Image 1 (cartoon, one colour):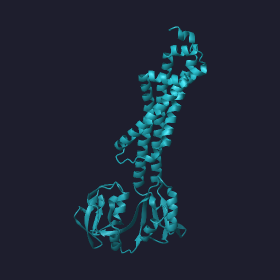
Image 2 (cartoon, helix red, strand yellow):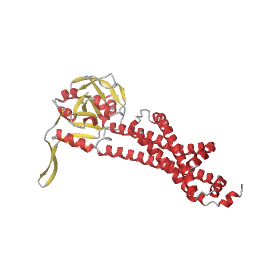
Image 3 (cartoon, helix red, strand yellow):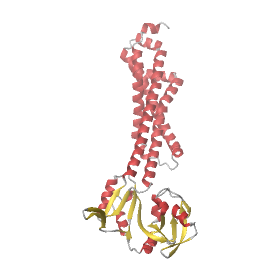
Image 4 (tube, one colour):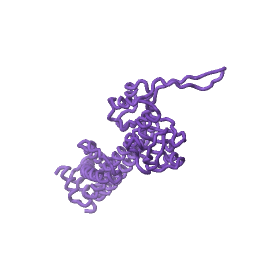
Length: 387
């Protein structure tokens, strides 16, 4: 009878204990696999939402500043705009190699217009693109869907006492208030928004835009590369990545990863301690059996190998069971934590299963080293006294 047969026979003989140990070892493996699936879904969701949270690239007209001195005094500076942005530049932005990483491209035209007799800031936008970038907007009424409608900021609505459905005059052009923004605490509260083509006619501009804002899926590409490509297709523009948005996203994702590592570390330690105490108790329970083995000629290496082999089989069974349970749990628990979760199925393959089982086996063997050493030090005479 070889060592493998002895170990398997012992595990089958103690079915209840074997099942408990396998489940104890499978629990941390299951938790690790499930948590990785859930946190991957959370990371993907956070990346997506942060990418959509406003602009992370701003395209401005290239300009030169000239300091003016008169009479030995600095009287300020003059900004010389070399070339303005045009609406056709939006098409150029959408033609870059990394265009698939662009979530929204929103051109804007700002100006001052007479709104019911008061000079206020007006902005021409593409509402479809603007709403992609400003998902936090809450509108009382409706978002404009025709060229004859406007959207008022909260402050403008209060100042002019206008509500959805009211008529408003912009530089003698009569338009309808389709909606009012709820207070955002930003400059949007003091702006009158309308379709880009409408504001162009009101301000008397042809094809000019003030700036272009972009939101990019930068969790899968370097934003610097997007900036470089845009600079090549629009050489007369200044392309500025908004570092705060990028840094905020990276910090958030970094915290998620660190939390995952700490959580997994605790689970691994917990699983190892459970197996360690169980194997140590098992060795003490098997004193008579080990005494018999020693009496019939088993060497220390055989006794040591018996305990390690038992730990190996427990780790193998626990790892396989934990991996399967973790996948099932992760798939069912992810939609609860993240309703729009997207499970990264490409991460669940033979390689990940092999890593999970190997981790379980390694943890089991390491946990069994000291109990195996204790088993080799048992006095066979003392062990046989109870026979």
